[in-house]
Amino acid sequence: MLWAARRLLAGVLGAVAVLTLLGFALKNQCAENYAQQRDKALCSNDIQVLYSNRGLAEHRFPYVNGEFVTVTNPDGSTTVDLVGGTLEYPVLTGLFAWFPALFVASDAGYLRLTALLLAPFSFLTALLLAGMVRWRALLYALAPPLVWYSFHNWDLLVVCATVGACHAWWRERWALAGGLLAVGAWLKFWPLLLLAPLALDLLHRGHRRGLVRAVATFVGASVLVNGAFLVASPEGWWAPYAFQQHRAADITSNSVWYWGFEEPVPTDTLNTVVPLLLLLGAAAACGYGWLRASREGVYPFVQVAAAVLTLFMVTNKAHSPQYTLWLLPFFCLLRLRWGWWAAYMAFDLLTYVGLFRWYYALGTPAPDYGLPYQALVLGVWGRAAMLVLLFVVFLRAQPAFGGNTRDGPLPLLPARA
Image (tube, rainbow, N blue to C red; front, side, top):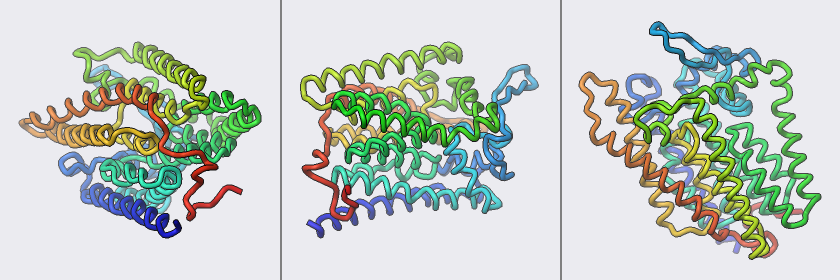
């Protein structure tokens, strides 16, 4: 048993190591000549861009002196921006992004140090998945998006926090689950949506003490993370959310709201429609979970969480390519036919290659973006259709792990006291 566990962990972590190195090689190939090579060589990443554009190069402490501004262009149009060290993400991502900038003097150095700090979170994610679902963790460890996106943005952090919350839920450590969802929420916000299915699960169990612990820890951790920033600079703390509120579904959004309409959908309209769709869809998912629990005796927490995530991804004003990383753990945690995973990986590859090669073609003197454009359109709509289907498929799926007392964690992972 111990030998089998070691072989499993060696296989999973070895696969993550290989794809992580390939991911670093992809982004690092044009680190020193980023502006000229980024889209042509498919090494585009937000890490180097935001190092220069968000005050990280000047070592500005995030949010405290930052603000959201509206800029009037020479042609009379207006654009929105963030200044003074504020990033377009909640405070924990901003703090993580700020720290390595203190030790480098260029965007290339910043990319490399950031990659070094991010990589362990991918290994921890794989380790936690292997503890819950054994060899199915390879659906994460061997996923091509680890190459494209591991160092595209800071999303490995929120993936690790969310998987950690699922692991804590699996081990019935309710306070820890709530705390890790709070960490995820203040990294990239969307794990906040998973608090509702967690609460419904505990309510269905009749575990009121666990429910109070999970919610109280979530609230307490949220206050601890945000409190000092909110007191020091309410405007700086709110700036990321103001930025996202004013963000249009434009050519950079990569969402169905841009690709599905000939005329741009007004931002005010989207700010009403998108939350409404998300609220109705999440309520439907949670309600279906409750009906399923009444039939089967167990609330499908992971299934509902996965479905709510797909809804968030497909309805959001922006659908950045690296969002695929968010979805990978749920392919591991739920029993689906392997074709769902393979199809999504294929559409994601079309999106990644098509998007950045299209961007490259747009910047050439005589743009010819036939194949990149076709790949991008197929990838965008294929991925959107997959998310709609996965919303249903996830809700109907069975978990890939057994009960925490029956199967237990892998021998190399710490047992519950």
